[in-house]
Length: 345
Image (tube, rainbow, N blue to C red; front, side):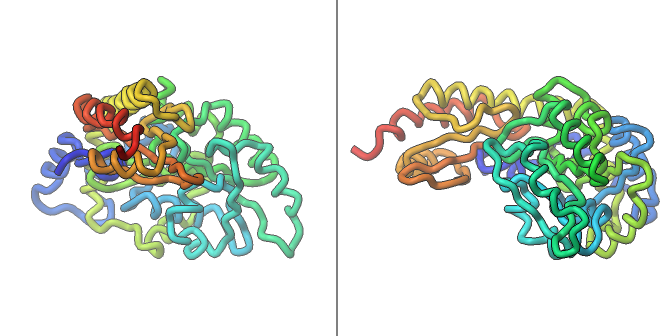
């Protein structure tokens, strides 16, 4: 099957992850995380977010977000996020269903949430008739392909903590953000005041598996029960732990993320040269472009991708580069753009 620009979820697994799975497949091991592969995987994650972090493996990104939020919230609480956030748009109401809380989605100009976006919602704190903002949740990388700098994360963390709230980060693409900024993962998370992190694996070369990391001491509490009751406790957890140990216990995670980012930069440059209008300046591995609807149809015959938003007779499309995207994939796609922009003859 050919590679596409639809999603980094569509890519195959890195050979390093597959070798780790094969290694973990030898013989029997205790279930539910009581095994050496899970222990090594947790150590690998802690090497990026701090030795005091409490780390729990789960199956997928929605599961990571839902269980992390469940641990931070109570009935009658609310989570504040950007309107484009994955928890607001792409998780089929799972956060509300499993947490029993409300998602307060705030329109933003570029997918980034800022203190000024959150503050107007905090006037209801202490008012029993309103869901109480308890968590601020941000996506890193944001769903628009832009990256939060450490100081931007810290500003939200300071606001949250001043109001007795928590800061959660959906880090499905945390590796891409770190590679884009040339910073360690801790600089964007633990050191910037994030309380709970959904640590991404699947979008960066794993077969499956994510981690929930509690970075502020004392927050994990009953999380083990949240994970089990939320159907996210892997019985054969060694297969998740082995992948994290192999990928995040080495330089492979960074190599994959940096490659995906570089390919996106190549794609963005080629698209601009072909006359394509970019909506946001790409900073990681996603490119958003504004195209005539007919051009999007033509280009989709060359390589699959998703529409993001329709604006009149134009469509905003999203192109995502993966760890295995090649220069040839990009050059072939870019070569088709000028004719697609010309439209039907």
